[in-house]
Image (spheres, helix red, strand yellow):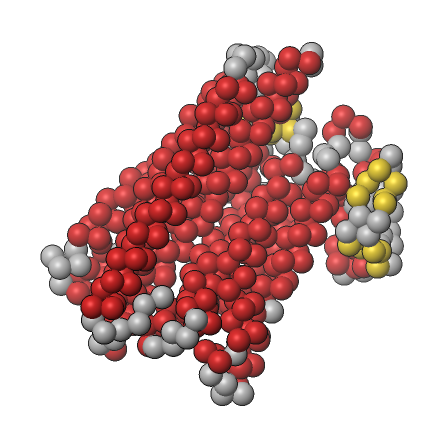
Length: 445
């Protein structure tokens, strides 16, 4: 590519990375928040718990606000797919577009039932109102399945036949949706969504308890999301391990970058930290044979090395490896919060007084987001230089129309504004609830 095309490619990839990195947080909330709301609502109805019902009502407002912002960012992403990557959509739209069409159906279904749920608090019977929230949660899961299946297809393309001109001439929709990577990418993303949402919410109420608020409302607001996230976390370890083995088999170049493996062979060391400079690992700590042992349960497991990957097919190993380490490191720290909480409960300690536990949980929301973003860097950057793995290079799919730098600046400005508006809206809701609690004689966060 000439320098001008390289500049456009960098701008297009940067814009896509920025918008995806922003939207994925909202996508996680779109999956997790409806479940949190339904759990609180169900507890409130079953036990006659006014604090639980109040949480459900307030969380539903947060759910609606984040859904609205996610709708905007998701729409921008849809346009970007066609505008920035015409080579992808032009050649593979017949296959790649299937999961996005299904996602659109789930999106409209979710929007409809969010409206019914929000406006049904005083207009529907308690049971009918609770049931109206079920399609919201299911639609969030279905929409996430569809989008992640599309991403999985980019990692393991299947279910299509190419004609002489290189375009898709026939499609097997089920094979597109349930490609080899779908089986581990979808549960990995869904569990990540529950972890991000759960720990983000729990961190808010952990801060509240650190500030001395420990009534039923705050304790329940902490317990519901924390328990759900703590259950999802160890499951994520298992699914993540399965996903890593899938990458080892299907994308050896990505796996070599993740583990910073240089030469092909058995008895590969696990490298923690470190970067690749001039073909050599600089820095970091190596644990002998651990990478092979983790990859195949045996130190004799053979792993392909970066040096045996063609030079023009190697991903940026240092970035992928460091992102992998961040995801594993932060994720492991978050997983340990669950056993810590169980230990406190076993010892019958008041969590509101376990200040180090609360401090750690207060940081867990940010930690979960960091692990999420690092994981997506591994997934997307690790696939490079392919946009459709092994078939279409990113450089061949990017638009040749100049001016991507301008659209990148515009999108950054738009998303930054949306971020500020979202935070202001949530802060406004919090202040309104604080006023309501003060008027009722309660203590607000």
